Length: 402
Image 1 (cartoon, rainbow, N blue to C red):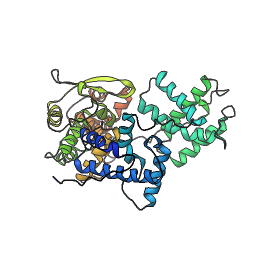
Image 2 (cartoon, rainbow, N blue to C red):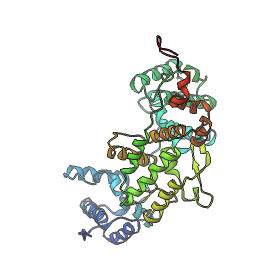
Image 3 (tube, rainbow, N blue to C red):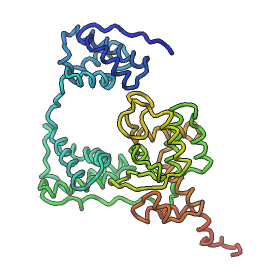
């Protein structure tokens, strides 16, 4: 192992560097990575000395000013406030760095906070869905704000709503249908709470349904096998990725469901797994032997002892926080590149699981139960790929014998 060169820290941060080094080690950082963090601390401490700043003055605006000067000085590594997050967390835990009080929210952000509370409390939406709704309706509210940031909700008209939707349909045609759903929910919230005189949900134009006839975009068994074979079983990250891909391909889980999987969600004695799905649904599925085997291999050999929280899958690099839904999607995308399949989204493995069950004789009802579809119509899309069942229904080509 390479022995890192530790920077000498002088100035206002010097009293805290040894404790910071120990905290980095406890969090699972390698010595080389920890040494890089200490070098950043040394540079920041010199900058603070030059500007006659103390530790209790390290507010976000001050940190932002430091990184502005660091980038201007020609540095290309560790040039955003995110790089200082481990240090700032350590200093705040010690009570020496200020607890930052952000400025008052704008009228738009204040309304979005109320809308988020409504979605979570009264609609029962999970945090990720609430965040998506906020992101989709924020541009609409921004169009209603004046130069001072104040909102004129009383003057919202059906024409303004229709115009916004039409504009978004031209700019973001792929996401407009989901945006319309979020916008209709927002307009209902505004009316129920007396912020608009009339309910404007009916003013939203109907969005055309997707063109019929498109088959679910899955992967063939050979392609799935190539994804799994591309995982390096001699490395900790490879074994983790193999467990993730196997869960997606065999059980048809969503990326967010894999990310949310907790240690207590696996009942090893009963051979069952609890899936935390959409809308706070908890469904119990059988745990296939091959899926359980790769998960056990990862847990026994590779899940870091410094992992925080109770999720099964964590980041490969320190700090070992829970792997996010985006992290799961990234695992699949990289596996697709290794297998020569190009970009592969996690949801394609869900489709692959459905088509594999169909090919093995599973019924649409059984597939719907495994994929946890709420409506039979959702599962019915897979009837299009059941060519054996559809074959007898095909009419002969004109001129050919029946």
